[in-house]
Image (tube, rainbow, N blue to C red; front, side, top):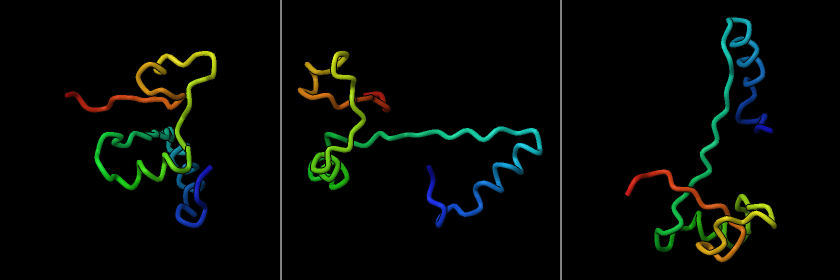
Length: 77
């Protein structure tokens, strides 16, 4: 889904791209910093339990997270 109020022209734009031989590809980057102290975005996510989850029987990060929250690394050390 998308926000039709803030992106009201999106369907027309996608149609224009397609009619000009181009593709429309969405890229999601849901990563946020989970180690920054007092980071309100992370705290609100924790409070509302909004994270992308591992399937119950395939949680390969449980030993790291202690829960089903999916953790990804986007920047090198």
